[in-house]
Image 1 (cartoon, rainbow, N blue to C red):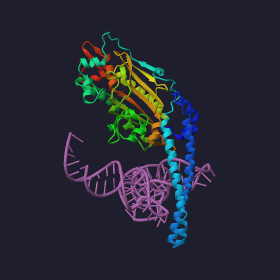
Image 2 (image 1 turned 180 degrees about the vertical axis):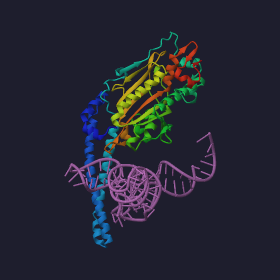
Image 3 (image 1 turned 30 degrees about the vertical axis):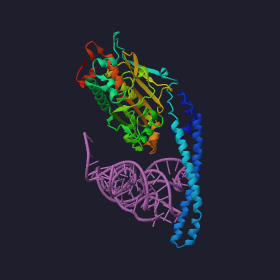
Image 4 (image 1 turned 135 degrees about the vertical axis):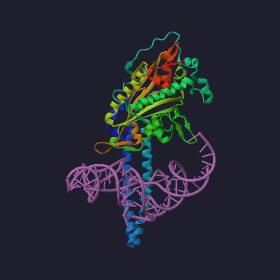
Length: 423
RNA sequence: GGAGAGAUGCCUGAGUGGCCGAAAGGACCAGUUUGCUAAACUGGCGUACGGGAAACUGUACCGCGGGUUCGAAUCCCGCUCUCUCCGCCA
């Protein structure tokens, strides 16, 4: 959620930058500023009336104490009118505040100046590419065939338990997943991220805090009876750990990580996008989250990209880094890098990580602040990234490393899997 | 699921109708003093939205939402959460 003060001080710039993501914010912003003006004057009127009531009440008390009942009662006579007015103004104020908030909730984050204009992922800037695509034979199999051949992932069996998009990992497949989770968590903690095991059911406040609500309501599984949602990413519980918090300067930066299953309804997805492990309703992910002094957040973003790139190098996967264009960037993000690995048999790039700086967009909703050098409370910047999402990594690892003897395991993972060829 | 107790500032904890944005202690910050460490003393120490160049000042907030009252942290109602006991259970 953008701040009213930002809208006031740099309205034109924000409108221009929102256009980069093809969002016309002019009318909404004007409306917010107009409503905020009315909010302010209403607040002033209300304060004045409450002041009168407060002072009168004190006088009435004095009069009673002094035994001057008549004067007291006379003063009391004025109160009902004042109370009526205050009630009216109070209601008006509530309505105005509600309207302002609901408009602000509709406005996406303002993209950083480096974010390129564009419509779709085709317009993203590919800023780096690493590793070379393995030359597989013509008979190279996509991972779903390999999964069946080695009996490590059963897609049909999962639909018996739940439905499509909930695969069952078996034997060395399950072991491979667990190896990846441990590998990623070990790497993250070595890099200074504190390991957390958060709840994966989240309440409404948490959903609003990080921006999944109201924007992505339909993407989350909802447990109606308790009004809870299944977390679509550990970003939600991890970042919300710090909701309604004022951090001391020495507590920054906050760097935390968690492995959690993630749940997404993925309504409307179809075709090759959902084949095999490409898009699931339940998947595993290790997430990294940082809370930063605003002056350091972009440097932190670069470091996070470097960190994730390091993981992909250790996994010996060819990958590229994209800076998302305005049309492809998420609602809450100011700047996002996607990491994509090449899945050699499918011959396509798969997004395995999305690393974003939200600037104050989430912090504003979360009321997450820190005491700055002047001793004032200031909104922090929040960032997060996948490090990494498991299924597509597994898909690429299976496809890219297939050979006649089975599927080779990257050296870095062998200590975790306990085998160097899956067969 | 049943019964009971509770929710006050960074923490502990007082406050049962006006003098309470809230005692006291601790922590923290600044200063004074003692040769250092420690101690002692003095002052400061919540958030949000307004007004004001500033000093300062208005309003709201004692879990959340309503109500009673001239006046609510304090009384009433609803909700949420925490704790204890019983039941069930990984």
